[in-house]
Amino acid sequence: MKIVKRIIVGAAVFYVLLCASVYFFPEIYFYHPYSYPGNLKKAQADGFDAREVVYYDYEGLKAKGWLYLNETEGNLHKAVLFLHGNAYNVEHYYHKTVPLAEAGYSVFIPEYRGFGGQGKKIRQKYLEEDAVNAVKYLNSLGFANRDIIVYGMSLGTYTALYAVTAMQKQEPFDALILEVPFTSLLDTALYHVTFGGIVSVPLDLLVKDTYNNLSLVDKIRSRVLIMTTESDSLIPPAQAKALYQYAPEPKTLKVYQGATHDTLFNLRNYRDILEWLQLS
Image (cartoon, rainbow, N blue to C red; front, top):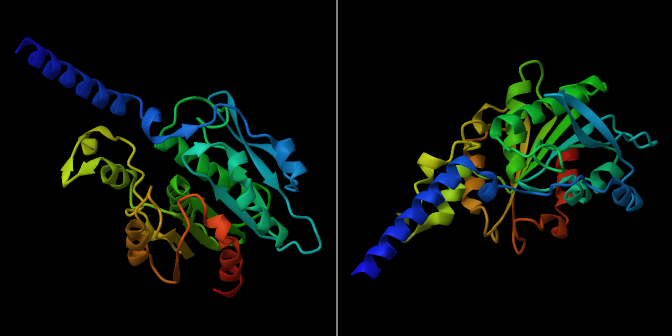
């Protein structure tokens, strides 16, 4: 009996500590950032002719990102603001924007606080501030909202939606692209801890930063392209379809077969993006 009691007590202590760690240290469970900056020289060697810029100052520190200003003859005088997902750093994502740069768009990929060596804490309010300031930075370069395509992937779909809804009062954006989006972080997390209809961890009580896309999507005033894949094991594609249902017109839903959460690029989804931007 003593052994059984010790097992029960040990399990209870472990469960309490697990719940406490989810509440106080969400970085452990929901984010997987690289602690070092992206290798810009490598990106340049690969043909992405960007430069590092400071897009705003916070708490005595500098938020940095990669900027490619398209000054070629085919310059479209439009910019793509790419907001990345919950892991790695900007270097992991720049390849997704190269076809857009080659098509005549300027590209800005801001690094979030907590990623790429820019601080340690990652919080929803910080990422929201980063996204809004990224838009302001492009505005300062002469790109009006009508010249900006906001493109978010995974976690970046929330920062993209937040920036668009927060900054569209003055003027709508040219377009909004949501790649593998979710209804909310809480919905996605609950999906992964629910077994047989039973939730193993009370995440609704523990998750403070819910990144609720569903609360924002009906407020957008720009055309929107939503892209998902039926093979996404991280975010159920039903969540993207739910966002599409509540998004206002004009809207387009593109559902892929055979891609995973991170591999739409391998199916050349950038071709669909470019076609949609030109025709919609």
